[in-house]
Image (cartoon, rainbow, N blue to C red; front, side, top):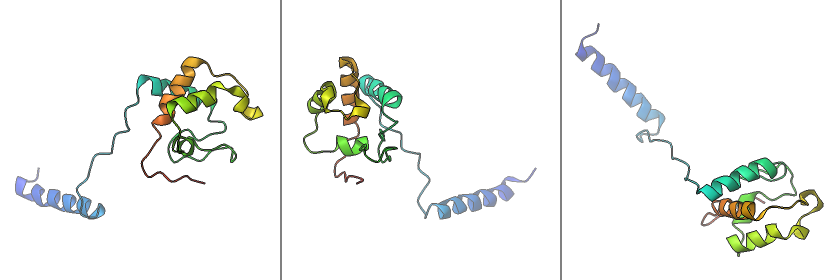
Length: 127
């Protein structure tokens, strides 16, 4: 077993190598994703089950259907609120034919809660 004095330089070399790989900055813990409310969590689950075939429903995503806007683009539109988004979802005649289905009232509230978590100051649309 090596003596303590022989191990210490190896530890210092390893630490220096780790700092060099990070540009001299100490290693930081990964940022934790923001906690979603219960309603927003249900909204995300609904969106994953019903909306991902066309839309990117998470930040910085690309929609599978190029004609379907990513949800962070929608969420960051001027004037969008939980109320205006809920009114859009409740009014099925606004949907293109591919989206012609009814979203129940509870799911509308949940989707609105999730959608608003995608709002970011200074956001710039992807398209």
